Structure formats: C-alpha cells, structure tokens
Amino acid sequence: MLTMINMRAPLRCIIQFVFCLLVFNYGNAFAVTPTEIKLRYHLDSQLNNEQLVLHVRLDMKGMTSKRSVLVLPSTWGDVNGLGNGIQHLRAESANTKITDTSDPLRKFLEVSDSTSASISYDVLKDWDGPLRENVRHLVHLEPTWIEINTGNALIHPALKPSDPVDCSFEWSIPVGWSLATSFGVRDRQQHFRGVWDRVQNAVFVAGDFRIHKQKRGRERLFLAVRGTWCVSDDEAKKKITEIFAIERAFWKDDDFPYYLVTVVPFDSSQRGVSGGGGFTDAFSIHTAPEEGFTIGLLSLFTHELFHAWNPYKIGRMPNAPEDIYWFTEGFTTYYQSLLLWRGGLLTTQQYLNAMNQSLRNYYLSPSRNITTKELIQLAQSGHGKDQISYDRGAAIALWLDWSIRRKTHSQKTLGDVMRELVLEGRTQGHSFPELTSDQVFAVTSKYISVDEQAQMKAFVNGIVNVKFPGDALQPCAVEQLVDIPRFDIGMSRDQLENKRVVTNLEAGSEAQKAGIEEGDKVIKLSVYWDDVTKPVDLTVERGGAILPFTFRPTGASLGLVPQFSLQSSTDSQSCPPPLSTPR
Figure (tube, one colour):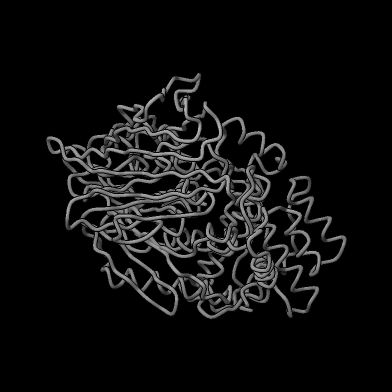
C-alpha cells in the first residue's frame, strides 16, 4: 500500500492533488462468509458558523459479542495521531454503552443485544493556516469541499484485514457537490462487499471537484480535481491514462473496471513540494500549484498502481504483512522506474539514477540485515513500515531478473514470474488464498537453480546481503564501487521545513561554505531529502536583500556502494538495458 513520501526525495512525496483512480475491486473476489459484519455509515456535512462539521452515524450488525472494541481514527500510512478532530462520540442504540480502555484510541462497546449497535460522532477540522504539506494527512473539511479517508475519519469495530464485511456509505452533502470515493463516483449511496482491508484503505472526496471520466473497454478511469494547478485537467488525464497503458501492457491485463485519481493543490504560498498516496482503487495527489508531474510523483503513482496487481490480483495480504513486504513493496519499487523507462517517461540516465538511489538506501541502511521475524516484532510493537522492505526487495528483484535472464538466455524474465503469480490467483476462484513468501518461492523455483533458490531465501531474510555481477545491466551500464557521503543539510531540518528559517547552522558544512548564515529567512527551497546527488537550491532574505544559494548536501563518508553508470559510448536516450527488455 501506500506510502507517503517527500517527493523531493526519490519516492518521498507530498502533494495535495486529489486524483482518485478507481480500478480493480479485489474485495469482490473474496468469498464472503455468513459471519460477515454489516457496517452502515451515514455521513452528513453540516456548516456551522463557516466551519464544516461531518456528522457520522455508524450502524453495526452481525456482532458476535456483547462487548466489542471500537477503533478510533489515528493512522494513515506511517503517520499517527490523526484522530484529534473526533468529538461527541456517543451511543445511539438502546442498551448500548461506550467506555474507555487503557488505550485512548480504543473504546469498549457494550450492548445487551449482541448482534447490533449504533453510535454517532462528529469530525472537525483540527488545524489552522494554509493547506500545506505537514497537515495533508489530517481531515480536510472546508465550506466548499471535503477530503477524508478511513484512517483519519472513520470509527470502526476492531477487524483483521481479511475479515469479510458488508459496508455501505450514505452521504448527505449539498446539492451540486461532486462525490468521488474508492467505491464510486456521484452516487450518494455506495456499497462494498469484500474484505475489511479494502475499506480500511479507502479515500473519499466531495465538493467543488471537477470530475472527468476516461472509458476504454471495461475500464473506467475517473479524475477528480479541485483548485488551480499548473497542469490542465486534460493534460493530467492524458498522463494518467498513459501510465495505465504502460502497466496494462506489462501485465497483459485489461480487467480494470474502476479507478479514481484525486488532485488537491496546496495553498499558493507552498512551493517546491508535491506528493501523494495510494488507496483502494484510488490514488491521491497533493502538490504545490506550480509543481507538475515530477519524476517522484510519476514514480509514486506507478508504484501505487502496480499494487492493483501486486498483491491484489495475486493474494490477500496476511495479518502480519511484514513477512511479504519484501515482495509486495520491494518488487513494486523495482518496477516503478523500470516501467516508466519502458514507456519513454524516463531517460536511461534517470532510470539508473532511481536504481542507484535504491541501492544506496539498501547498502547504507542500518536495517540491512534485519530478519523478517524482527520486522514483524517491530510492527507489533508499534514501529512503522521499515524502508528496508522496499530497498532490499528492489535489490532482490534486480538480482532475480538478471538470474532468470542468464539461465534462460533472455527467453524468460522476472515479468514472467509476476504474470504467473497473477494467473495462479485467478485460478483460485473464490478461495483467493493469503499471499505468502512460500507462494512466491514456489513460482520462482521454476526459473532458477536450487542453489539460487537458497540464496534468494537468504537475501529475503537478511542473512546475506544481495550481490549481483557488474555486468547485470550491460551493455548499457557498468557497475563500480562509489564512496557515498552522508546526507547533511547543515542546519535544522525541522526549522527549515516548518519555520522557513536557518537555525543550528553547522560550522564547516557545505551550507555554511556556500554563504548561508544563521537566522536567514528562507523564501524558496528545493531539496531532495536524503539524496546527496542532487543540489539544494535555497533563496533567503537577509537585510532586505534576496540571495540565492546552491550547495551539495554532503557530509562524512558512509562507505562504498555499488552504483551503475552509463558506458561512455552509450546514448542515454536510446540504450535498452537487458533488464528493461519488455516481455
């Protein structure tokens, strides 16, 4: 799933562009059992003194205990503490009581009738100031528009991701408002029946959004945009459709009934930031008004769209997903830049830059040799998703793709493995099993030797570091060991991002050498966080003068890391690396 990333770093983004893509309904492939719980959300927007309040009533049926646990909104992706806008929680059904637990984000729900109960509460905007990056994860409730998701706005019973649910949403919003969600467009009454994971990762926007539809065969692509953005609605729709075509061609699959992309620009005072996140059959973008489709944004969108197949057309995510993140997130990370390169949206040099960044992240990570068991334990103790699953998995994918091509003389590729896994998922019918590492190993065993299978399992578990030969990307690129310096901005990042002021300037840092001074007021900032290969562009106001500075954010050496560079005789616009050969 989704990862929110700071777009100025490779794959770290921040955009407020509500661009909801409705694609494939994985939940409906699940055989819903008679024990499913029924959830009915009634969402009523109410404008009180220019403040929009969302009143929510939840009716629950099919509960199996007289004492259940309610989960309050708190988390979206890796961001916590999102439930401060929840107020006036109360029981609505007779003989129902809500009491505290030791966890403020969970409540006990006690009922005399053990099969049904109703509650209600209000959702309020709990932040001030302009729409900006550091509030984009919070609920957006404005007089003319709404943007929420399950993680920051919906109370629900404690459920496992694979639990079956029958869920409906009934919206009471002003006449003339648009509505677009993970479950449909325009219809004020929406219904979903499938696994809870699909509801848990849903997004909802309403209000002054411009809705555009693109239809191709069975595919319905919707774009919901509000505000002013430097990219026209037609251009945005064209770019999104282009990426869809690239991914469909890779998977050889046109079965995408619905997908939504939402776009919400930040306030005009926000510059140099863009980002987004993946949801159920949807992708949301938040961006500075002057930021277009950056490489980071294109990569993130490609990554999240790839999840429509991996894992959602292969198998259900397990309740301890850290066991399979190396595949679902890591292999997806590998393909995000590869597919953009194949589609002509990245040059070969840009493709290599993205791969090199992932390799740097992997080889320099303090978590490089953490085991799968340890990742699961960290998650159970409240630790967020570790970046190592992305970068180690991407390195494994590069090694595996090369190994398959070498053994089969380029007659087969990792793409064949991915498509075979999807085909297996389709043949399971309604059983649609849980996705496991053993399932992936079983398919890859058809393409690599027994020794390579054992080596791959050691890579996955962090026992051995991933290694591949220097000719893995020849004839276009060669591998060499490069001394990588530590990323060092040379000042307080928190004050730079949130206060736009230079504080704690480090003596001898590249920032100081460039001429930046303590106390400078920053009026423009462009930085690719954690990427030492990209310069920092910083404009400050000092004594009435406007001064631009550029410097490399480098510090002490971190060590030698394998990196790929173009052969001196190679044309970066036309070179087709063997790993990129479409199949």
